[in-house]
Length: 299
Image 1 (spheres, rainbow, N blue to C red):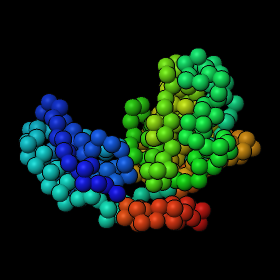
Image 2: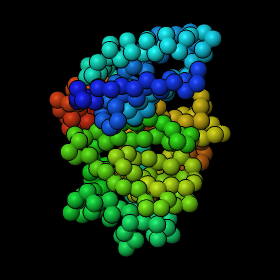
Image 3: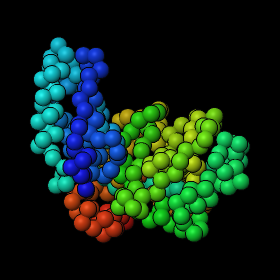
């Protein structure tokens, strides 16, 4: 739950005349992310003249405005009112989606990349999976894998590169997995590599540099500039802040079947419409996570 300390010192900053950055807390948590989403959803519903764009983030949000239509100070005052109305957001009802994301664990492509850039890693003698398991105190890599696939993840924000989704594990803080990034970043990472850095998972939407620990390969795209697949017809990316992702381990045969469906442009993400209420999750995190996953299985 959001603590009183997290709510102290919300900082409102201006970027020229067109931007307001609101930092709600320094530390990321489910509670502070829910506050960001709740404020952004309320602001979006108000449809204020002069508000051009609203971008929620892990523990903050950014608003772009037209200063000729709405004065930045007037909008700041409205944002402060929304923050007070939302409070700790424990009773916020987030209407969202839980989405199935198929992952081939310890795949040959990321394994090759790990070997190629071993000189940039904290422990070159270990694979990224072995390192992440060891540093989090798991007795085996299988136990670490079970923890990764054993709970859904909250998409707390999008950014850094188009289509990149930050996934936050929906478990109590004492069970949260955290993994440091590479000592020096790689200059190459395969597209769709499934990874972990800090407290967040990510699927690399395109090939490029990176420093997250590599764990597997996602069968499905997170970014499609040509908008070939039905899920991408409206925009280049599919996931939204506030989505819930269920990473599901698949074997090589299922991975290849899904890849074939992607290539012939028939693939669609399995998903279910769900409601996420922070207070329910605080009261029963495991039961709430299980109910969310049942909604997806029953869809």
